[in-house]
Amino acid sequence: MHKPPGGKTYSLNAAGASSNAYYEQVRRVADECVEYCGSLEELLPVVRTMTRNKRRLRNFAKHSSDHTIESFLVHTLRKEFSPFTTSVMEHLQGLSLAKRWDRTLATSEEQYHVYMLEIELQNRLDAKSFRQCETKLAFLPHCLRDLVADCRSTPRGDDYVCKGCSKDCNINAVSKLLRRHGVMPYIWRTANLRLLFRKLRKQGRHPGVLGIACIPELVSGMRMCSRAGVPVVGILLDANRCARWWGEFYDNTVNLQELERLLG
Image (cartoon, rainbow, N blue to C red; front, side):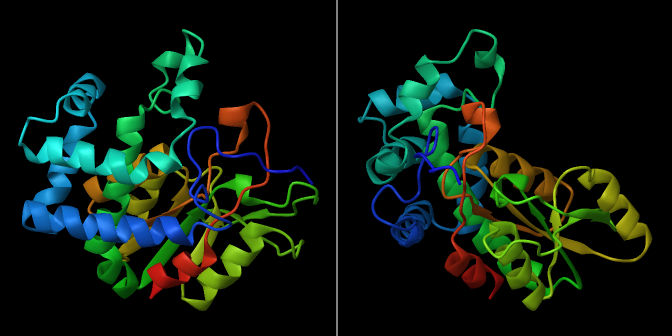
């Protein structure tokens, strides 16, 4: 089995053996930011808009005299979340010219910090609605699988499903936990979520979605679900260790304690 390196750009377990400290910290920081802004509903649109312009984010980071909400957020988040994103600058400097056009690979450190807050805020906004959905679906990244086992996942329903072939497989562990909470887990390979939502609504079913991914990809998926009017929650991979970032796959993990907390 591969020895997992730190994440290519972020590692939630940077402060210790697990990512528990990160989740405690992001909840505390979110409380502080919501209190500063006034309400979660006011803060979330500001956070989503901020990440559209990397240059503007950098300018906020350089100047501490601006008393706007955006400036407060950039400086607060940099102070609190920088220990989890120490590899971003090295990664960006190593990108080829062609890969710098890839928005995911070229995510700036300031964007990572704002995304961390956005995921926590979206979870707070939609957790109750998600739990109340009759049809709850989860889409899991295949990079959580046991890399030394012969994966026997098969297509069933809307995408691939785990067959439980390895007790060391994190997809197996996550799938079992999700099923206990009435959530149908899929390994995301072929599903088109927009078409899936349309089909389910025609059937009179109103879905809720749980996603697991690295920071930039989870934010992208959660925003897409939110625009479609689908309650969405998400939990981060503990680091980004897949082939898209490293050129090969390394073992990856997700915090099962936090996943269970999110499921209620």
